Amino acid sequence: MGEVKPAKVENWSTGTDANTLFTDGERVLCFHGPLIYEAKVLKSKPDATPVEYYIHYAGWSKNWDEWVPESRVLKYNDDNVKRRQELARQCGERSKKDNKKGSAKAKKMEQIRNESRASTPSKDSTTSQSTASSTPTASTGPAPKTDAANNSSTATNSTNTPATSRANRKSTQSASASVRPGTPSDKKDESTAADTTEDEAATPVAPKKKRMSEQRPSLTGSDVATTEKQPPTTPSSEPAPCVESEESYAAKLEVKIKIPDELKHYLTDDWYAVVREHKLLELPAKVTVQQIAEQYLAHKKSVKSTSASKEVAINDVLDGIVEYFNVMLGSQLLYKFERTQYADVMQKHPDTPLSELYGSFHLLRLFVRLGSMLSYSALDQQSMQNLLVHLQDFLKFLVKNSAMYFSMSNFVNVDPEYVRNAQ
Image (cartoon, rainbow, N blue to C red):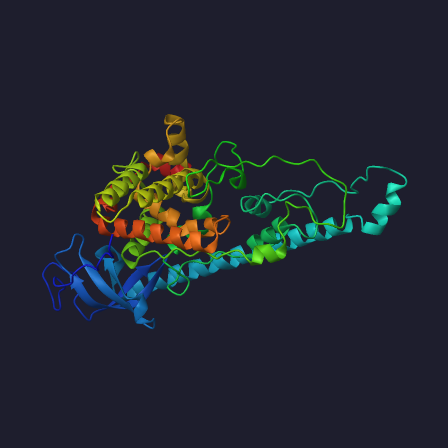
């Protein structure tokens, strides 16, 4: 399939129109993520539904210019300026609070690592102890499990080897990293719509499941590989074969999936509808993730240039996308406000795959997170490049059909009781 050409702009308005609230060249305020920025209206689409404006953010590069719906644009007046300042103050306070929490967790993890190093018998002491006992015992019990350690277990299934354990390094990094509210400078590929909600985007409570490292599927449609825990072995100077070395960790490919500009504002609108307006996406979705994958496959089959071997590869990629979606949705793709709905759905449809219940907005959130998950794939560089080509082509398909897949009418209001239970 060839590249999807940008939408034609012959319907742009270059003056005032009775259907628009803002005129071209007008100084306005505009939502971008959780904050409000000073901006200027460059063009408008009065015939669009909803009306859209081409916005330039004051003080920012023109690379950040974008089409936004009328609901994100505000009149530049004293009330809205105060509202802008209040939002900035609240985000600043949350950032400071998270920094303090992250610092405390980092200190605690550093203390745990130091205790772990102190309790590790050296090679010489191991030799001397072996004369008294054939099985050396650890001097201390297992380190307490923290939230950061839980997060690191999803990235690697390592043993409790002190000092060299990658899980310890990852837990310290995740504990010390503070979550910042999204700004244009912080947004790479508009990922903040799923990443910048601090506690809002925390993982939902779900029944006990295998760790992500044990159930993460491959994008080739292969079965999920599981890893059994090995019994503890006697200490040795050689690192355990299942512990990833620092060199191999640093050598991992950094996978980046570019979200097309035409889809970025849907991430922001999605975040605003759920987090700010307390709305939910209607479930089951009118067009589910499974149906979108089937429609994409049917489209590729209709293209004459799609060979039989390419069709098999596309099938494998789509199977992988669906599997990743089913695994990651409950833990990484939901906002806090959606957890209660997720729990209800799991009770009503316990045997139904999530890809047959959720739709396009949650699928788009997957692509924001998918790059970091693919970094742990065993694919070589060439295979990864081929995979990224398929993923980008799938995103272009979403762009081409965005009017059908990404409708704000899919969001529904909830009753006050739900709001109380969700908070």
